[in-house]
Amino acid sequence: MMSKFETIIGLEIHVELKTDTKLFCGCATTFGQEANTQCCPVCLGLPGAIPVLNRKALAYAIMAGRALNCNIQQVAKFDRKGYFYPDLPKAYQTSQDDLPIAVNGYVEWEDEEGNPVRVRIRQAHLEEETGKSLHEGDNILSARSTQLDFNRCGIPLLEIVTEPDLRTPAQAREFLENLKSILEYTGVSDCKMEEGSLRCDANISLRPVGSSKFGAKVEIKNMNSFRSVQRALEYEELRQRELLEAGEEVPEETRHWDEGKGQTLFMRKKEVVDYRFIPEVDLPVISVDPAWVEMLGNNLPELPQVRRQRFVTQYGLPKYDAGVLTSDKYLADFFEETVKVFPEAKQVANWLMGEVLRLVREENTPLAQSALTPQGLGSLLKMLADGKINGPQAKEILPEMFTAGDCPEAIAKKRGFEQISDDAALLEVIHQVLAEQQDAVESFKSGKDRAFGFLMGQVMAKTKGKADPRRAKELLTEELNKQ
Image 1 (spheres, rainbow, N blue to C red):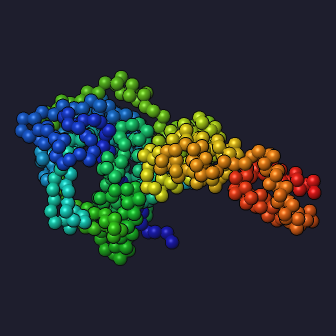
Image 2: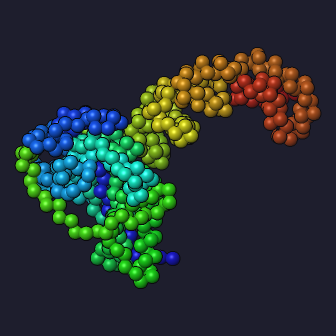
Image 3: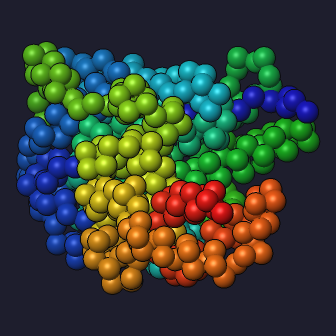
């Protein structure tokens, strides 16, 4: 049944830029350090402290903007965004308002049916991170007390604001996956959501189908994974639809996503907030050299869409395989390095998408943090292709390579997996089986093909699975034809 309402979604994404020092001072940005040990008068907003712009952060913002098809402004400036919150010691955030560094971009991809999807980027602007509030309790709404860590104050952020072009929660997740991939490829951020270096707030509203007027907007916060974003939007979409279908109004408000309950919960009413933006008097207006912008854009690495197409044309991979492999830069690099060792690209792709990613999920360990190397995987696949081990044995060896990093040859030898591929040794076993299983031999000669499978099983059993199945099958066929 067709819904009477259309869903409208816009996203605000905060991306932590991968610089060694903060946006306006020399304090380190290292994650996970002891609370309040990476602070100085500048990032704490003490009187008289003067900020100085981090040139690398500006370069990263320009690179990201170019990768997102934005126009880079030749003139940009910083503003003071005034609001009061405990983790904002200055009582204002240094951000960009009317002259952001990048505007009017877009992200494009193909959906599962191969249809092009484009989501416009309104702007991408630089701003400083706030501190971190540590709530004692299950969540912010039920916290008994709150402590403050100012280590994050001043870390450079790029806030990316989309136009309200998204129409489904699943599409919002696809956009975020594509955006994350682009940013990782450029090297401007590690995009680790578990460390807070990529965060997303979502705005969602519903309106009658055919209407051009936006409905009441609800903002959702506290989503710490792409799955959470999709689940929160799905819940909120259903909640708003039920209200509208019952003839009730949707109140404009900010809601908190509770992962455990699978619900959005009321935080506060939406009000018109006057941030009292004023130009940041301690920072000069940024005059961006077009030649520098061109140089940064020309030196961007190969981006996911381009690499995806190259994997199809260069390696002959299906579009699906190319999409999976290039969705993560490390995975794509791993694939190409493995192909240098074992050039059967499709087989490498199958193992990476199948057995390797299964181990990533089961061990809850990113591939980049595992002990598996492209050289090791390539050697394992070469042993399999050469008949030194069989498929089940290769699948037994791989987990040890993933966790311990041992070479496949050593693991195979330790486990007694060396295959018997010598014709003389195989023929000796085959002759024993044929002599012992005359009934099966006669059944095969009478046209019963299942007897061949039985005899082949006996060969494998006598060799304890070590027989090269391909060569054993060939020799067994030859010997049966002589009977």
